Length: 123
Image 1 (cartoon, rainbow, N blue to C red):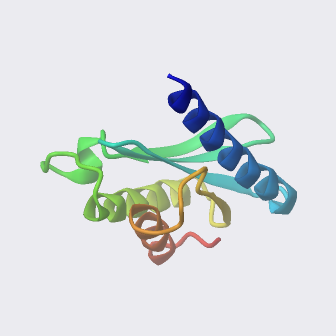
Image 2: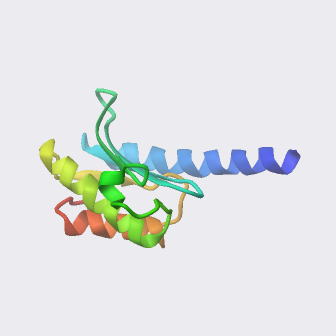
């Protein structure tokens, strides 16, 4: 039980450290927030000043991943990245700040970011 609480505390410390540095450097831009669970991958474009989610995409959306079983893998991450970029363009959002949360920038998180960049987002 103690190890689980310690893991959560460390996770929250990493997340807060990243969020604090992003808020200092954002200059009024919206955030592209990524969350990864064991089974799914989620991405949201959030306007922190207004407290509004402008666009969202995840592996739960069948329109995003197609008829495939939604898995949290690199191919699905690329599809989610492309989908969030398209939805952001519909909302006239081009420049964002990438908020990786407590997750390291490699693997699925990097694939999502690269796909979003290829489809028109700049960060």
